[in-house]
Length: 117
Length: 114
Image 1 (cartoon, rainbow over the protein chains, first blue to last red):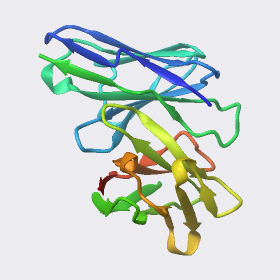
Image 2 (cartoon, rainbow over the protein chains, first blue to last red):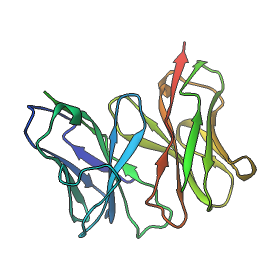
Image 3 (tube, rainbow over the protein chains, first blue to last red):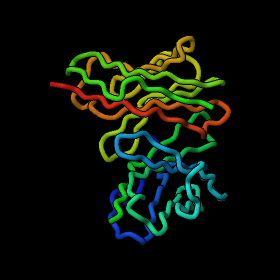
């Protein structure tokens, strides 16, 4: 089945640093990728949707300058949390789908737990 | 716009008992419906989905769900719970016109007692 790999799975860093999270589709071409944020014991909140080769569409309330998303190829999207602060600590999950396959659900990565000290 | 309501943030069953996780949706257009499972510190794994056709959908790990349009429901069931079923379960909805716009329920934590 479709596999999405997310890296790193855990990251701890100091306040003020920038952190990059990668999301790769391993066995299909991901025309669309999604980035979610999940707080403890809560559901997933969509942050942004990115289509390959175009700018990401951010949900209301998500700072695009804070959360930089790049989707330069059909197999890779990156989320960079710039100048991270403790309030950015969270579980970030990516998902991917191909619009070339009808009715295809989103396939999720295993998530990245980000802890900002 | 679509939305999903999961009734019961926490469900506890005994091993071998029936599992029933409730999901009601709201959508002005024909919905796509999904159930995902999440284990601690992991992403979401698709259990099953309904798009069109047969309203009773069978998924992995013995789970199934039935789409009932008249009740706007998509409840998840499993005849006999196993300890390994303990996890967080999310119901989600998207629509035929915009399959990118997926909305998740708040989740239901399933506990299985020995």
